[in-house]
Length: 454
Image (cartoon, rainbow, N blue to C red; front, side, top):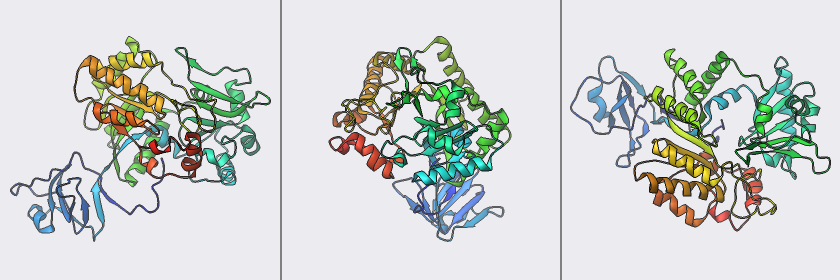
C-alpha cells in the first residue's frame, strides 16, 4: 500500500456511506442519527458538488445543503459534528488492490520510501535485526532505478546483510522478487533450473548472470512461485490479524470499498469471519484468478464463489487475468521491441486463441472480466477478445476492464470507447517518480511516450 503524497489535505471521510448520494429531499420524517455542519462537503453530484451540511440516518444520506436546509432533521438524539470548515467526502473506493497481500506487507520490510541503495540496505538490516525470531525475512517496495545501471539487484547484496536466513523482497510492482542465496538454495534453483512454462507458454524468468550462468537473485513473473511456495503458509489467525491491520489502514485513509484484484474463496471466508465478528469495515468486491485453460472444476469454483458471496459487504463476480508483465522488467508485451533493448519485445501469459476462448465462455456465464494488460500488444489482444465476446454473445452492460494500460496505440485508445471497456488506471500513474520517468521512459523510448498512460 503506497502512502498518499504529503500535499494531499486532511480529509474527514464519511465511512458509512452505503450507496450513491441521494440528494432529493422530502418532507420531514424521523430525525437523523448524524448531522455534519459548517463543512466543505463534496457530494459527487455534478448538479450540486459542494454543500455545507449533510444529514445521515443509518447508512443512508437523507439530505444535503445549507445548515438551515438540514436543520429539520435534527432531533433530540441526533449527533452533531461541527466540521469547522474542514472537508468531508464519500468514502473512497479503491478500484484495484491486493488486500490480503498488502495487509500482510504492513508487518514486513517496507522499501517503498527508499530511493538509494544505502537506504535500502539500512532498512533491511534494521528490520532483520529487530525480527531475529522470524525464519524468513519478507518485504516489498524496491524500485528498479535504485540499482542503476543494471536496474536489477543481486543476491550478493542480501547475502552480506542477511546470510543466515532466506530473504524474499517483492518489487513495488509485484512482478519481480529479489532473493538471497539461502532462498535460492531452499527453492532448489540453480544455473540449470528451467524457466517455468504453463500450457506451452513461458510464464516467468530466472535471471542469470551472463558471465557465469548462475542465478542473480531476481525472479520475474511466474518464476516468483518457485521461491514463494517455500515460504510457510500463515495460519488462519495470522491472516485475520493481517486483515485487521489492513482494514485499519484503509479506514485511516478513508477507503470504505475495495476491488480485490486477486483473491479466492478462502480469502472471502476470512472476510466473512470478520463480518460475523463485527470487524469488517470495508466492502469488498473479489476477483478470482483466470487459469490458462478453464476446466469444469474451475468454472464450478467461480460459480460457487458467486453463489455464496453476492451481497452488500462481500461480493464475487469478477475473473482476473494477467496478460503480460511490466515495462520496467521488459515483460510487458509490446508490438515493437523495447527502445533500449531491441532484442526484447515481452511476452503474453496466454496464447491469444486460448484467451479469447476463455473470455467467450466466462462472458457467456455473465462474469465480469478484468485483465492486467500494460504493453500495447497485450492491450490489443485483450480488446480483440472483448470485442469477440460482444459479437458472439450479444450486447449487454458488461463493464469489462483492462487494468493499468500503460502504453497503447491511438487506434486502440479509440476502441475503449467504442466497446465500452473500462480503462482502469491507478492514481500512482498520475504521480510519477524517477523510476517511472527514467527507467520506464527509457525502455519505451520517445516515439511511444505520447501514448503513455493515456
